[in-house]
Length: 322
Image (tube, rainbow, N blue to C red; front, side, top):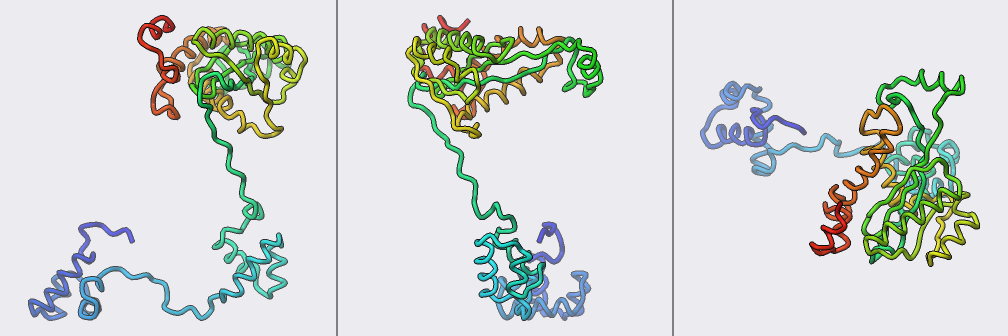
C-alpha cells in the first residue's frame, strides 16, 4: 500500500494510538477523538497490538483466509498439461468441463496464455573476438537521396510523392559499412548501388583502412546478399587472404554488430541533422566516423572509444589521429 509518510494511521501512528490507550490509560473514545478516527478502529488496533505486538500493527493482505471456489491445484495442472500439448483454450475448457474464463485465468497465472510461450525464443548469440581483425562485419544500408529537407525532419511526404510520380526523384544511395568485431572501429563509404563492384571496392578500402591502423583482417562476415555471393567477391577475398563467412538465412542477429552500428549511424548521423541535400549528409559521414572511432564513448567498451582497444602508445596515437 502506498501510504503518505506523515499519515495519521501508518504503522508508526498506530503504535502511538495504542500506546496512548495501553500505556497512558486513555479511553478508546478519547483516543479516537485525538487521532481523528473511531472507537471501533481504536479497539481493532489495540487487540492486534496485545496479540502480536508491534508486528500486529502492519498492514495485512486483503486476500480471504479461505477461498472455497478456488480451482483445485490438480485441475490447474491438468490445464497446463493440455496446454503443453498445444491445445487451444476452448478445447481445454470443453475437455475438462471448465469455463473459458477459468482456463484463461489459469494459463495467465502460469505464463502460458500464448502458444508461443511454449517455445521460448533461443537466446541471441553474443560473442567478441579476442583480437582486432579476426572478424570484420560488413553490411549495406539503403538511404534515399534528397534535394530538400527530408520528411523525417518536416513530417511532410507530399513533395517526395510528387517527385516519384513525375520521375524527378533523386533516387537512392547505399551506405556500405564495416566494423571490427573486437575493437568496434568502423569504416563506411557511400556507393551508388549495392552491386558486386561497389561492394568489392568497399571491401578493399576497408582492408586498407584497417591495415593503416595496424589491423590485419583475417575474416569477413556478411549476410547472403547477391553481391556477397558473387564470384568477384570470392576472388577478391582470396586475393586479400581473407576467409568469407556468411550468416544463416533470416538470422541478422549473427551479424549484430553491423546491424547495431547502422542503427547508431542513422540516429546520430543520417537523421540527426536537418541536411538540405543528401550531398551534405554524404560530406558529414567522414567527420562523424572520426568522432565515432576516436571520441564517442562506447557502452560495450566500458565508456571508452573504439580506438582505445588498439592499445596505441602516445606517438602512434598522434600519428594516426588526424
